Image (tube, rainbow, N blue to C red; front, side, top):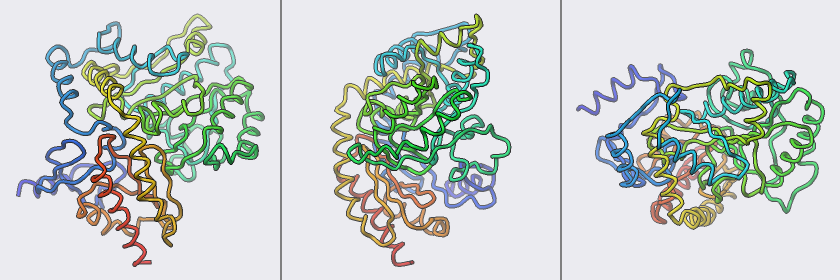
Length: 432
């Protein structure tokens, strides 16, 4: 009875992400979570294939992360970061500098991935402003990208295929190249970079930065592309004096098979955004890293003050959990775990490539994507319940069914997720 009352109140008063208050859709109340399982208020357990939007890489309720939170909260849960510092932030900055590319030496803490992108954009524009190149204030990116829901981030999301087209008139106007199509370096052709090259060569005098999600585009379409594209972009940015921002909020901390996706292209960005898995999904925290070149460039005119300061910047509780999460990842056999997930996803999902309703199956690291030939909007009256009834949690969007499970998932639990996807495909095929 209490659960029914909770859900009724929720439907009447709480606005959930990407939802309508007039048609909120089916909602499930979670009472607890452990490992890869969510326990619903009605007692059912479901296997989480989403890692709570790609963040809980170690699973839920991990004893080491729990202990990190408990020990930190007893000494200091929060203190402002203006004029003050603390050990958890210093330790976390040290770890981030150690595990990222050597030129990335400066760390700016933020409280969400979107804000880390906002900071990255401000860094790039201020870098050139401080060097009296005020005309370099636009950005170049690629179609099908997604970088967050705040205004600066929305402006570099795909304005046509993205979620923010209604705001186009209010957003800064940036440049968009076609999304990369080459999936493997072996199939690379110079034509793959031709449109991007034309845009950067034509507009470099007004461009502050290029911003990309390396190797895997997330919520803009779950698309996968080859490392050579990144190498070409890095070379063009160097050639035309344009900074390179890499958004690794979704791909960072092992998701694609390397600690950071840019490592597979053997390049280094000028500015790097990280978040999501940074705290293992426990609390919100993100960071924007940059090179000494960028940091010193921002200070070139004698000012150099980066005018940004989130209230909960470098929250000590979040920083302490993030330190433990990074240690936990590095001490684990995460590479083998991700490789095993990739192999199993390939075995169990690729055969559905030939189904009539399937447009493409894509696998990269611990990411499995099934792109359908039709949008799923008309099926949302039955699809969410159908998924949960199979004992799994998957959240499709548009024409995509995808999973990004915690790295600790067992073969049996992963098979249950892929079987659920198979059942969705089969049911959709019978309805077409």
